[in-house]
Length: 288
Image (cartoon, rainbow, N blue to C red):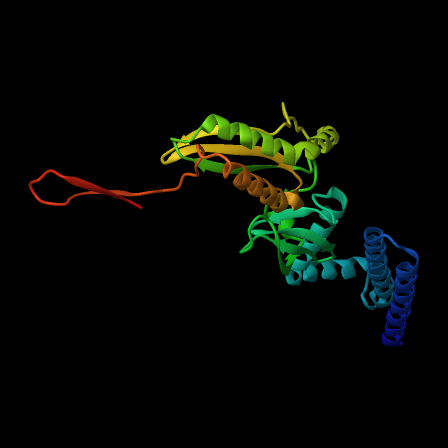
């Protein structure tokens, strides 16, 4: 009879869960809200089923203390990793180091969080063999217990913007002052709309975290390298628009530099000196 009751309870809870999920799919339009309600129904159904079925079978033990003692000892030994994952799930839900939609990095894995479940969370992978934090098309399932073992970097939470840098190398013979002015105009044009939004986000983030910057304006920094003058553009951008902003800035740089003959890109070169004829002291230089 207990086996029969257990099967009936599982079927009833499963049917109730199915009906509620259907109602949520029909009545809730917002994708993110629908996701949260669906997960809530799944978790409640699981917990309710566990409590009711445990109540049926607990009488088989001499006492409730014996039941929970044996259960906890067996679970601790045999289900160490699943318990760690459940604890990680509780930590993620209440502490919220990240939520669905955030772009994060855990260890060597980075991506956008697309699902959080009882034992694992799922990322839409970015980076790896793809440049500029673009999606690879792969989905990565990571155990929840990893949040206790590895650091998590959140691209979205808090400040919600990233500082991005693009270095442009020009020759020593180039007019670096003019080049710097051109780059400053380009980076200001491509990040003007972001600075105002970033200022609002920074004010919000400062209420939760100790985040403070003296300035959010874009800038161009000068540095001398072995084979030229490096001009580095530093600006704010949204995490998911990093590649697009780089694309727009580089196209503007190539277009503007092509208009000025006194500005040339620098690149590594080698020079070879050798005598054309021995004893004549004449030298020929080849450069590549």
